[in-house]
Image (cartoon, rainbow, N blue to C red; front, top):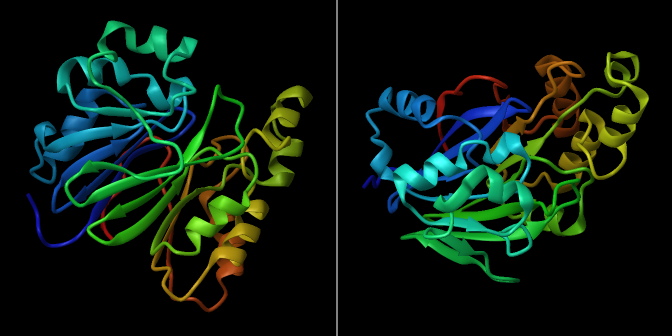
Length: 264
């Protein structure tokens, strides 16, 4: 176990797959399982971290880019997998995890935090997205408050309230409005993305950041950027303007490869 701070690694952040690694003094855990165990193992080996260091998995929702490899994680790691009761028996959870989820599944408690590892609590909050059910997480790791909301069609008062207390926020900045309108997606898909239960635009993300930014915010990571309807430069420009002269560390997470390991 480590005793020198909290760390985070984004394995992948986009429609191709999503997985985030967090580590504190009591061990490590994942949010979502949209990458292969082989990729995860290779990325962690760079930092001398064995797979066995991972002690839990949190699931945000049951879209394939977030749970594609959850079955193999359950089978090989055999660690607790925390899921919302509304998605525990959804069709995607069943066919993507098979028999391997049952022995390790843990239901997230309603309106309270779960103690998932020593020094780590996770409280889920509902967010609008067109999966069976979708949550963000208000995490506390060794006293540091971290909020992650990877797929969110519209910002909510509850999400904002948690972000206003966090030192690190990971939030979706999926698309640029003009790029979506002039891009390759058909009208019905465009409507789904911007309809309040799809994804958050750069402008909507910036408006939320302007509202929840506070003196204690140290890190702001933009996630789930679209490959066709956004660029890191556009996302960073929009959100950077919302932050103004703030000294917050602002970064766009890579879509298809691991990020650096960040000290939070």
